[in-house]
Length: 367
Image 1 (cartoon, rainbow, N blue to C red):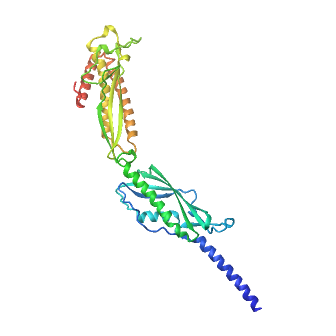
Image 2 (image 1 turned 30 degrees about the vertical axis):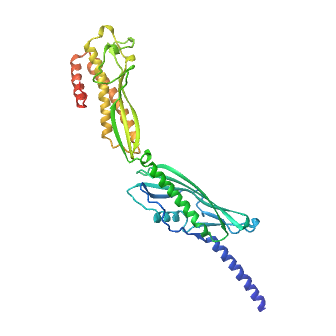
Image 3 (image 1 turned 135 degrees about the vertical axis):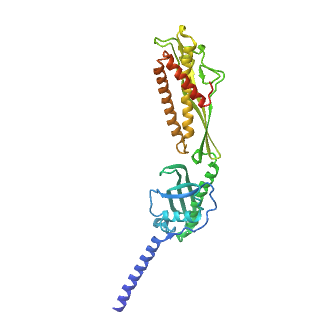
């Protein structure tokens, strides 16, 4: 009876020990070593890390043995504290953080290790890391910068999971080095990384002159410019001035330089006059239509100069102000014709002449 009882106890003890070892292997974790990343960022700092992995369980599925392919078993191993916390801790402790620089957010898309057996009892590991880098722009907006896709392999003997730690750590470092290299190269020329917007204006010129007349004090309207056939309307003459611009954008030393060539133009092929109405008074009335378009263009420039153009939305602001100035031009043209009765009210015409001249002079356009 005594021997029987001892035999039973031995079996239970062996079973408990075996279960303990299995549990220990299941619960083991990989500790990322605190080692300074060999870079000191001059253009960014890591403001946040977001875990967007499809599989947020253990980062590694490791083989317990490579001796018998028919009995291979994998067991999950995670970074200590979980991948997200461990990676965040590693970056916070080992990458310099200067918060006067650009705030970059890491979106962790993938961080996975799998293993396969090799001949000779060795294990081959496959590491895949995918990270997206975005830049914070305020108001919770993000601007995507670039992606990092890293892959690595390693060979090891069956042993403690901590053996693969250097490979995982170097993969993280490589991602940060990749970001740093890209930022250093792109900071002065990539529009996504620009720090400010600078605007300049000039008047568009075309030589030799074609069908369009571009506004110039030195180039007033002439009767030879009225080249369209006379339509069946009751007016004496008509022109169709408009405004627009050519835009050239270039990033220089981190500044977005937006150069405008402002177009205030009038097509000869759409302008007409009745043969018996070619006199100075009628020509002046039509010239004033051209002047009004010039004033609307000056208002557009004034509005843009008064705006705080942001790197993230300067194009949107410019487009809105252009459309507003175009509407203003059309409204002024209608008001001018209504109040002068298309030039037939000479007193009203004189008042508009004075109003237009005064505003042109205020903008440095001498008449």
